[in-house]
Image (cartoon, rainbow, N blue to C red; front, side):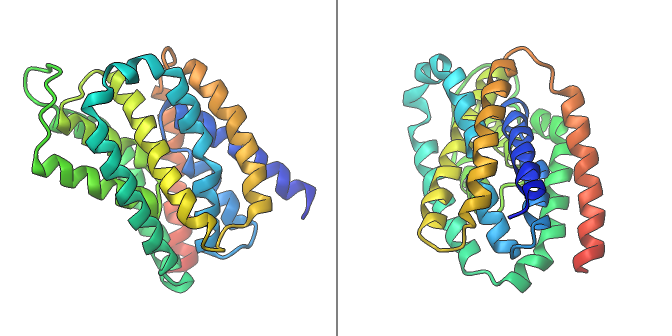
Length: 253
């Protein structure tokens, strides 16, 4: 393994950890680096899913008091997220590299569009009145399931998808929404972690280097999450996502 490759993975892990803890979108920084190492796309995606996990976990620790106050309201959502995350990871395992390569540009495009129009999605899915009424329905449960399934399979842009899902359920306070987004992201990533760990499709040396960087990035991002405006960070993520969409359409199409 080249020192430069390991350094790039470590830096990408820091960036992904910070980004996931603050605004989401860490996959945009780390997944391309895993692909650039030359490992197969499915291995890169599985390895990346495990590597970026600490960003969400550190943010959850930072928001632990708010989350404990709503523990009873989110048990079903956590269960749905875990089950769907496992199913998404299994789906990736049975997807061939050739098929997944063709899906990469579309998945990144979807994630980028969700980031670009995330604010409008939040408004669309916010119940009238803006009160913290927790009223899950069959539709919101289905949205939660699909979001977690996507997260277990790929995960790019999962943060904004989860926030939209939580708005549907009735969690309108932005800080609580962000806290729950990180909790569910951690649960989904953990579900994928279990499947990928026993699947043999994880490149552990690369993963552990990025994972260690994500711990540092998650710690730093978690300290900023409650006070830092995500405005400029989101612009960087969107610009990077647009670039990657064009690049991978050119490369794989």
